[in-house]
Image (cartoon, rainbow, N blue to C red; front, side):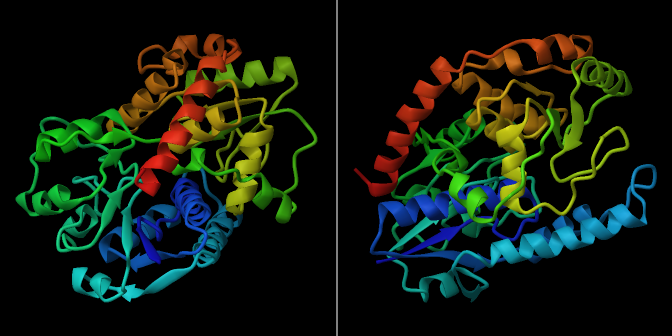
Amino acid sequence: MKIGILTHHYVKNYGAFLQMKGLYETVKGLYPDAEVLIVNYVKKKHWRKNIIHVLHYRMKTDNPSIYIKKIKQLSVFSKYERSLSRTKSVKNAEDIKKLGLDILILGSDEIWNLHGSGYHSLKFGTGLEDLKTIAYAPSVGAVTDETEIPNEIISGLKAIDRLSGRDDETIKFVKRAVGRDAQKMLDPTFLYNFDADIERENAQSRNYPYILIYDCKLTDSMVKQLRDYADENGYKIIGAGDYKKFYDEVSINLTPYEWVNLFRNAKQVVTGTFHGTVFSIKYKKPVVCYPTEKNRINKISSLLKDMGLVDRLLKIGCETDFTDLLCKDIDYSYTNKYIDAKKEEAEKFLLGE
C-alpha cells in the first residue's frame, strides 16, 4: 500500500513541520506495511511569501548577528523537511494521480484557508475525485461564515471519503459548502510522542526556570508586567526560536525538537499561536494565550473550548489581567481524558473503522 500526505510541508515554521511529522509517524504506525510519503506539491507564491516573512529584517529589533541566525534557521527547516520521505515534485492533479497512491490524506494545517497565499483547489481534492481521499484535521484559518465558497472546490469536497476538521470554523465551512458533517479531530501533534526524537538528538535542557514566549505580540505594559513577575519569581524569559529585546536569551536557529523541548521544560508559557497553545497543553503547562489576529483567535478559542480551558484565553482589552492569569493554576484532568478519547477516535478515523 502507498499512502500520500498533502500538506504545507514547505512552510518554514515549527508548527508546520511538527504537525506533518506527527501525522506522518502516526500513519506509519497505523499502516506498518505501507509506504508513507509526503506529496511534494509546492505552491510557489506561498513558499516565497513564507521565505520573505522569515527573512524580514525588523529595524527596531534585529541586528546583523540575529539576522544571520535567522538565515541559518531556514537551512535547519529545510533539513528536517527532507528527513521525511517524499514523492517526486508534482505540479497538478494529473501528476498526483501518476504517483500510484492507494490513499491520499489531506491535512493538517491551514491547507483550506481560502484567504491564504497557499490556497489551491487541489488541496480540497479537486481533480482527484477518483482517488480514495481522507481529510485529516485541516483548518480554514481566517475563513468565516461570510467567506464566499469557490465553486471549484465543491466537487473535491463532495468526493472525499472521510471528512474532518481541526476547529469549529472548519466544521461549519464543510457543512455550508457541501452539507456534510465533518468530524472534529485533534491536531496531529497530539497523536505523536516527540520525546524519543528529543532524546535521540540529545536536545539540551536549560538548568534554570524560565517563562517561554512563542510568537506573541505583547503590549509594552504586558512586557513590564512579565518582567516584574519573572524577576520576583527568579525566572528568565526566553523565546521559542525567536528574539525580542526583553528576552534573557537568544534562541533562534533551533531544531524542531529543541523547540519542543523548550515547551516540555518551561515553567510557564505565553503564546499567541495555535501550535504554541497545543504544545503547552501537550506538556500540561500553565499557559496564557493572547492571540491578536482573527484567524489565531478563531483557532485558539475553538481549541481551548474543546479542551475545557477557555479561561486561559486573554482577550484583547483585558491586558491588565495578564499576570493574574499567568499565576493561575490549571486543572488538566478533563483535558487529559478528552485527549485520550480523541486519540482513539483519530486512529479509527484514519483506519476507516
